[in-house]
Length: 64
Image (tube, rainbow, N blue to C red; front, side, top):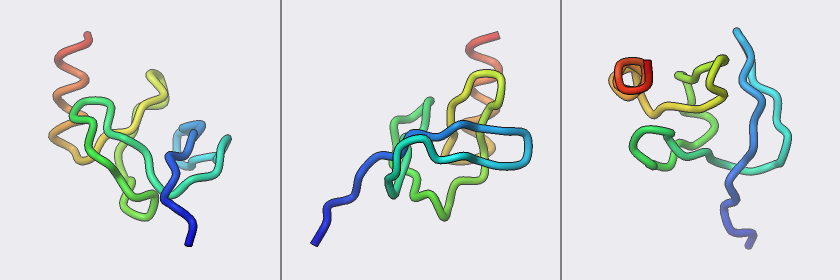
């Protein structure tokens, strides 16, 4: 059985492109694991994923 591996993604406006295969990414704000099937929030400008809208909003306000 293969262990879960962190993916490397290129974040686009309406899509994602896998650079390095994997099953999850880590939230840029919380460090939480986000399964790729559950990934709904990211920043194209910053090229980073977020676990939810609250984390995305926090990133916007903390790094402006």
